[in-house]
Image 1 (cartoon, rainbow, N blue to C red):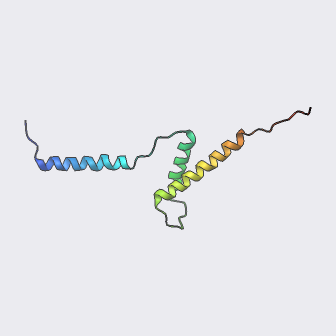
Image 2 (image 1 turned 90 degrees about the vertical axis):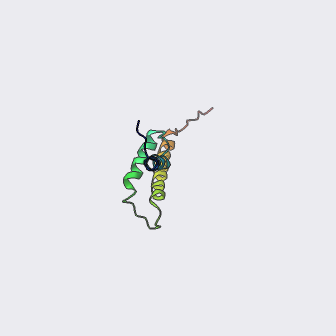
Image 3 (image 1 turned 60 degrees about the vertical axis):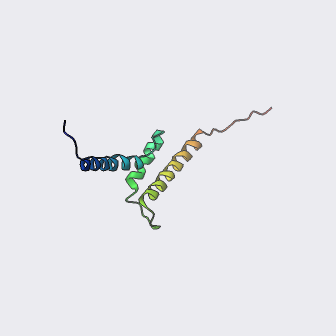
Length: 90
């Protein structure tokens, strides 16, 4: 059985850390609803085309687009559930 040199082990370890460590740090939370998935897609699609006058980082701009989309969808969902009540005259 051949022995791997220490330099190769360190290099392999650093490469694995770079690949797996950075990926875990940038992971997103799991998708919880179809609306959540739709808003994430909208934020990804619009993040580079939306004007950014305050020079926000791309992540913050994407969060703003996502939360605006969620508020818009949540507002539609809440208003569609309301029904007019009819009161009977006694």
